Image 1 (cartoon, rainbow, N blue to C red):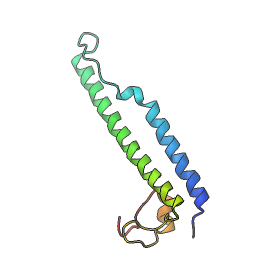
Image 2 (image 1 turned 180 degrees about the vertical axis):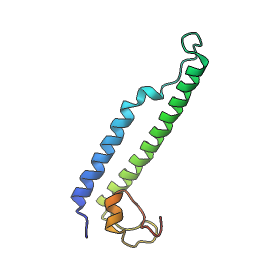
Image 3 (image 1 turned 135 degrees about the vertical axis):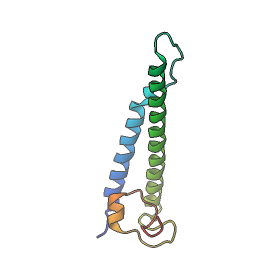
Length: 109
C-alpha cells in the first residue's frame, strides 16, 4: 500500500488549519487573569488561573503539532516523505495513515 502524496498534503494542510483555528478560538482563554478580588472571589480566581494554565498547555501542544506538520510538508517537498529521519528506512504506510506527520518508523519511535 502506497500513499498518494497529494492526498497526504491535503490532509496535513487540513489538520494544520484546524489546529490554527482552535488556537485562534481559544485566544481569550489564555489572557492574563485579573487580580481584582472584589469582582472575582479567591476560589473563582484560582479556577480561572487553572483554566488559563490548561489553555496555555493545550496551545503549546497545538503549536508543537503544527511544527510537526510543517516538517512533514517540508519532507514532502524535498521528496523525503515516508522515510525514517532516524534510520532512513521506509515508514510503514499504516503508520503514515494513522499519523501523516510521523518522522520516524515504529522501531525508531
